[in-house]
Image 1 (cartoon, rainbow, N blue to C red):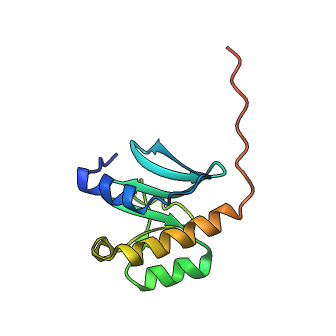
Image 2 (image 1 turned 90 degrees about the horizontal axis):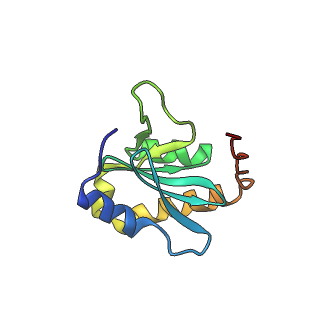
Length: 118
C-alpha cells in the first residue's frame, strides 16, 4: 500500500469537514473519513478520493479526476481521485468533499458486523 507523505496527510486533514457525524479512521494503511459508518473520503498515498453520485463522478472525471484503484485493475465503484491540481485550490477540493459527504450521509448507516465467536 502506498503511504502518504506529511503533506498528503495535512491536505487530507484540511479537507476533512469539522462535523460531529464525521469520524477519521485508518484505512488502506492511510486515513479515511466516515459518516454513519460509510467511507466518503480517503487518502491513498498522496491521492485523495471522494465517493460521489454517478453524475458527480462523471463531472469530476471530466475535470481531470480518475477512478480510485487501490489495487491495479480493481477500481472502487463510486470513488474518484481528485486531480492533483486541486491541491492548490482548497475551495475546489473542499466543494467536492462536501458533495461526497452529502451523498454518503444520505446512504443507510453501515451496520456493524457481529463479533466473531472465539
